[in-house]
Length: 567
Image (tube, rainbow, N blue to C red; front, side, top):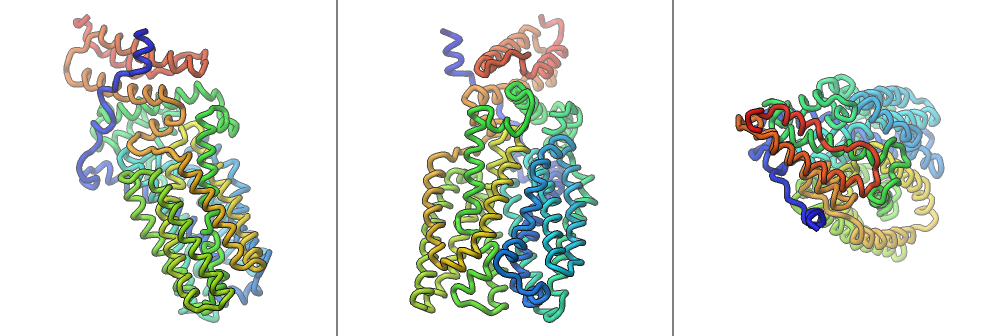
């Protein structure tokens, strides 16, 4: 009966991570400041993605690019737009194995080198076939970077900054998109009538991969990766230097984080003896995660945003805006607007919460896109100039709501709900879903717009209704938890309790032993017995017959340091 009550009403941990984190401004802590400088490098990967993905959109507006490649249309234009995603799909199945096997940093370097080869081929393109092949090669290299960089980011972040930093990652996509739009605009103004109007933007693509190849050696490897490979000493050094401001490896925050990381990875190993793509569906918790991840990946591309992202030229033609300068200015202005809204939303993620932002985003998109559809219909059916003018601000309003959730949280929410052992593979599935839905959009949208006109917009209105219902029903709030605690949300109450207790008691015992107080072996034995009891309950739930995954190393190490006179 007592055991049942203990399971139903577990004791709260003595300490939580909130008790040990830095409470002042982050820039006053040298370790956190140095860490955030290091994290700029993986953050730039999303900017590279934005630049590469938006470049063709900007090039389509340039008459010199159109003339050089003989005015591609229809299926050829669709192939040009989706070539990068085809390359990404080719590389996607192997990228998680590279990230988990070689490490996050080395995978990032490999991807950057491949991208540089693709940029060189694109710059020297003389035919459309060469240009498409270059786009495929760039996409192949980029997918390695896109898998490794956000993993490195979320696994290195300071605990209280994880939500904001990982939300900034996907938001920087628009920083690259802005560069693509305005570089194309600037070269059009300065080099009109020359092939350099499109070759200069191509050269800009090489800047960040060069930086990553040269500088990634100066940033630390993920402590989660190091622990998973048995390098716990190196992981402790990383956490000490960047999370504990270089104090020592017995800092309570370092002990707390290491205890949770070690416990979570060992528990995952008990649930999944070997990790493959099938592991993503092996448990009820994993199936819940993948349902949400695949859904929000689809929603990020099938909410109507693909119409502007890749075919702004056709969309603006549809409302009577035909001059190159006006199109380029609208495209560039929209990217700046998206970046500002995305940055603002990233700062709100811990204050408002993930679920609330998703619901607000989908509700607003449904209303704005519905009005956008009406203005398209009025202009095309009745040729009302006022309707055309109203379409432009509605596009901006639509993106305001899209950027509230899907810009900052698509990557951040996906990574934080996945446990370490399947994080790289689950993230690859999310990217695969984005690639597939994007490729479909890129082939289907120009054909559908050409044949159906504004009627095609009604399809997206229907999809937005479905998306809102799903978000309200299934999105789970995750704020206020460590990375390991967030990942455990989908596995039931007991794993969440185990993680909280493991970190808290490891910190308690470390402070007691390290503070000069005498700690009795009996007290340590009681704590160990309590942890073993918790672990046995957990393992009985998963019917595991293997050895206990309790963080015994930490506990028995402290017991060894206890004074024998206190028996």
